[in-house]
Length: 429
Ligand SMILES: Nc1ncnc2c1ncn2[C@@H]1O[C@H](COP(=O)(O)OP(=O)(O)OP(=O)(O)O)[C@@H](O)[C@H]1O
Image (cartoon, rainbow, N blue to C red; front, side, top):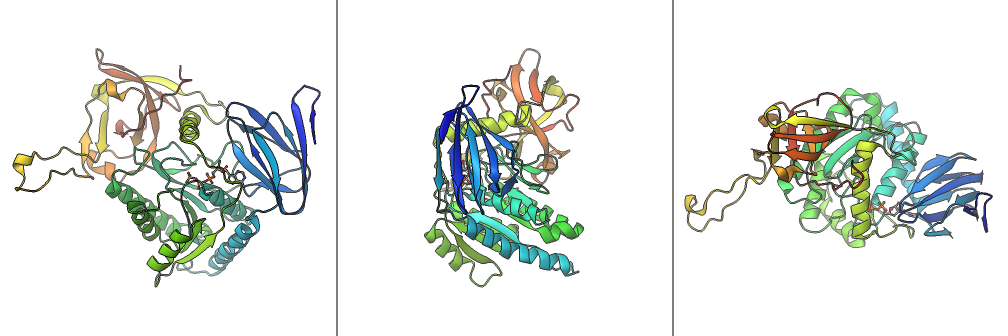
């Protein structure tokens, strides 16, 4: 049912029967509000209260699902909004039950050996991996557990800026407007949107695995809650090798393959004889394929959100640093040995794990650099990062650069990591 509200804004009301969902897409530049008028409903596993209104901005696509029936009001011009009766939500809820049984058993068994589930969602791009991870984390929090959300997706990560891998504990439903809480994430900087240095990518995934083990050892509740891992949509060749490496490094015991039978078959074969179970989950018909432009825009939004907050509530500080006071390094792609220095027939190669100092130049303009916890060049390969800065100006005469930082004051460290991350931040003043 559609009408115009008192304020002239279009209002549509949808009535959902049990186990139906309302799929909504917000226009690329626009905003809509969804309100639960009656019944019970959830968005990707996060319950909404009757009367609660959710704001969806710029191109957001989501589904409001109900187990028992609901009435939803949509205010604003939508790209598309329709009710779907066929959804895989019940199978996702069943998957949660299996995982939760393992959490409950681990929590009641008073032994450091009893671990909760370590789950990894895999599949091609645009099958709903991130969505399933959110649903499973939200269901876990509703059952009283706080799993770790681990994001290994460099290009479309959900936690912090792109080009990183990270882990964040989810101890309450993921906020529908603000996303995953950023209070305590553990972040490793890769520095690019795609994996062109598999050795370094594997290295930081292994580091993350070690931190996960340490957290499990130190905290019983964390051990029982386990983790939910989101991965990249790269599933062939080196991509598959990286998935298998991550599976081993993070000691994953449940792999959920979404939407691709071939990958399911491959993983079943490769993981035969291990203690890892492979399940296949159906892809939801609501998952929307995103264009390269949409992906670029959502990456820009992640950068912007890091500095300005999801709703523009943060005020980043613009500061100046002198080249002499900071050290910038890059990992991988160390200088090639000249062909003349190599045995005949051997091709020059680069060292993927080499830490090289970067000489500051105007090419730093618009770069996003990580502030490393590492104090020395040697520490950089193993250290996580404290946060990020964005270079807004480089002054070669004064040998300084101006940068945006999330908060004023000195940086936690003067050791910075650079990669190939650029943000053209059109709104940055
Ligand atoms: N049931 C649904 N109804 C409407 N939109 C949905 C539904 N499920 C997922 N989406 C939307 O589809 C898009 C793709 O989903 P998602 O990000 O989970 O896929 P993905 O496999 O993780 O993609 P990638 O590998 O590229 O990161 C997202 O914008 C998500 O909000």
